[in-house]
Length: 490
Image 1: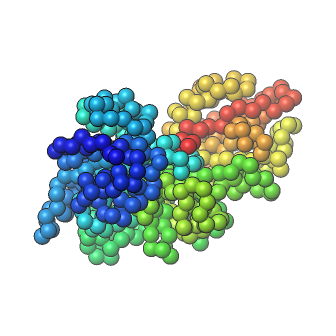
Image 2: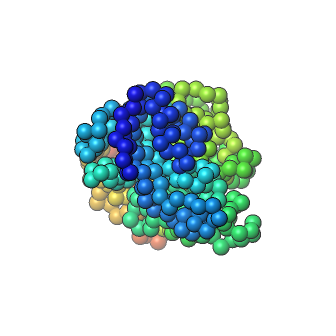
Image 3: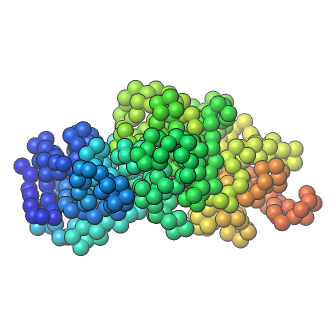
């Protein structure tokens, strides 16, 4: 039987049976649809042991849509919500004012908004606390205050569409905006109604209530938020499309993806890989190991996976969609990232086969036909911080720390199939993310197991003085950790 602390504001329920979940539904009646209640129970049943409800919760996201839209309707809508906090441990009411002791058991929260159609508002779940979720995911930390206790919800923000102010594309944009505003202080927080007003394109009619968004409208919204977005279309990029999508997600950049056949938009926030797959011919890690992308989709709860091949249900939280149904995606790039993913692929391939700098020319320990590569974008600050503490051979980590670098760099890691499974590499090529794609000298450095080349980007010519290079005296490969700071492994 559930344990209650019932008053005007808070309720505690121990989730031990279906009846306890039914009690949760009845207490929140009017603030949650039966469909949403069933979905939440199925998602968290067996994982959540205790739930703490905050009735009359003032949610800034719902308030934004309430004052700008719902308060103007004929039917009355409440201005406050219910926040439902889930814990993976059972505890009694006497611990209710000591919730900060249960940080390690805190799964996260759902805000239930009383908008009569779709109840699930702002939601943060820790993917590491959900047994159905596996993969590499973008995450940030969000402070939560309950009865004087401060907790931290870790995860990627989620919200379902309300079908008035926000439809699927609005929800996808809001998730990305909320993630960036929380993780990086240069981006301002945007609430749902504000998100809907970030475009001036009324070619499909009024903005609210919304009939949906076009790719052009989403791109305009990205620009007005402060991004410098890129658009990728499967028909234009062919076989590179999935690789490009993987590269941006691996860079810690969530994207809005469109499935036009389904008239739907989702947010891609991570990926899943199987490192036991056999390498056949391609040296690109995404082509070999990628099994699916992880998405936040308002038709599901957070972190559902979209398989690369077989869409049939398997162990985990899988979607009915397939990756091939994603036909367009929009990337929220920082304004000074001028070198796009497709250009880095071309530049890296050219270096690896270069007559003077190529792998087969400069390395006696590794051949191009034996390698696996992983290419992604990251900040030079984060890269230097990680490499400073790694056991990179010959003090190359210290060399990286001394090198002048732009704010963001592209990295093409070089490894072998055996070492890549262990999360290790034997070299990397660094690229200036502000470079022109036609600049043959867009790289900052080339490191093979037994060779290092540094490139002075300030030179205007290809004069030999721009290079510093040397042969590294080793007889065996010396592996070191691959870069892992962009995503959280779950």
